[in-house]
Length: 126
Image (cartoon, rainbow, N blue to C red):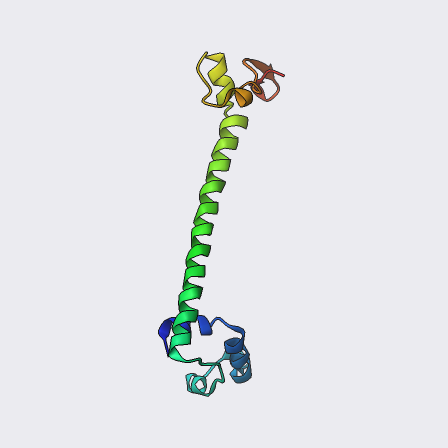
């Protein structure tokens, strides 16, 4: 059996069905005897097919991990942008100081160019 295929096979429904068949329910915790594993009835396709399955699932797993990292990065960027705009008021501060906001004009124009006092402290005007 191809080890990478086995990795995927032990994640599948057939494997967990077999675990359920052989599980020993005890008074304290459930257990599985290693000696029962060779008796598991799980599909074992030809080696070439195992390699193909493991390869495709490995590619999908890599893509899922890349998407997870991309989502983390995008979430961090969104949090930083939100904090900059709506907590630190960086675009407003830039306009007050006469500096460019670094934003396209149509977005920069949406921010006021002054602050006013409030119960919460200094906030953008309007």
